[in-house]
Amino acid sequence: MDVKDLLSLVLKKIIVVSRCVSVFKEIEFTPRLEKFKHMLNWDKIYLYFARFVPQQHHLTDTLLHRVFGERLFAPHIWKPTRVTISGGLAVGIFIALTPTIGVQMILSIMVAYFLRVNIPSAIAACWITNPLTAPVIYPLQYKLGIWLSGVPESSELSGYTGMLRHFVRYARPLWVGSLLSAVLCAAIVYAGTFFIWGFICLKLKKMNLLAQKATTNTPLSKED
Image 1 (cartoon, rainbow, N blue to C red):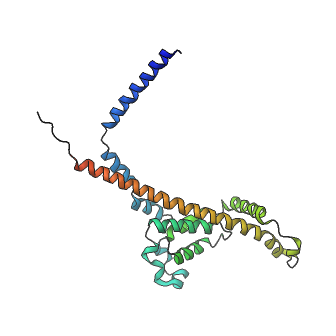
Image 2 (image 1 turned 90 degrees about the horizontal axis):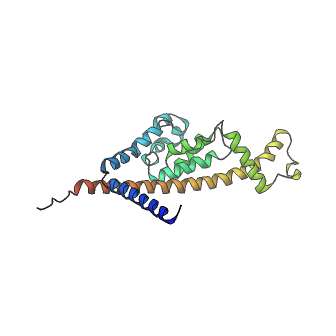
Image 3 (image 1 turned 120 degrees about the horizontal axis):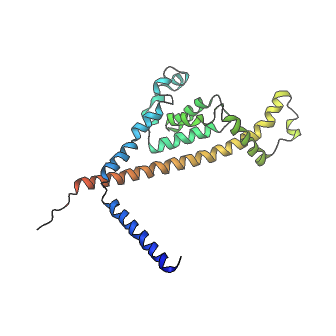
């Protein structure tokens, strides 16, 4: 291909792109923006995912209700906001990545209650570790703990026998690896959720302003 053919090909591409841009400018965007805004309705999204986590009436007359009383149902720890959702997910992730399977939901509720973050999101996030994922997550955390702290020496295990000796041998590396991974993942989840929530809200605000301008600004009639 010589230079002349290359230039003609580039000109054809430019013409096609310019036509596409002209057609793109003539599209009515307001209905599309309204449809996108409707798709990102946070109330509907929250109601959809709320079906999969315990609600306030699920905790009525439970041990947690008897311990904490009506303060367990305070609106600010159940209403989804940018801060409470980010904190709730971070709490759930932290609890999920610790070797506390079996009591993780109770721990998530208690920690979310004391930190005043969203309880449903904390409960949902703690289910990352479950009977299917725990056999994968815990061995990886144990290997991380071995790499960081090493295997306990025989002198440290001299006072333990039987199952207790095996528990002590594996508990320290597992807890070291799990706590490190829990802190890192919780921080990443909190920062990521906080940033994404703010980014989406900013985009929705801009789209709302564009929609308002499109509906309020009427084109001027041309004079003869």
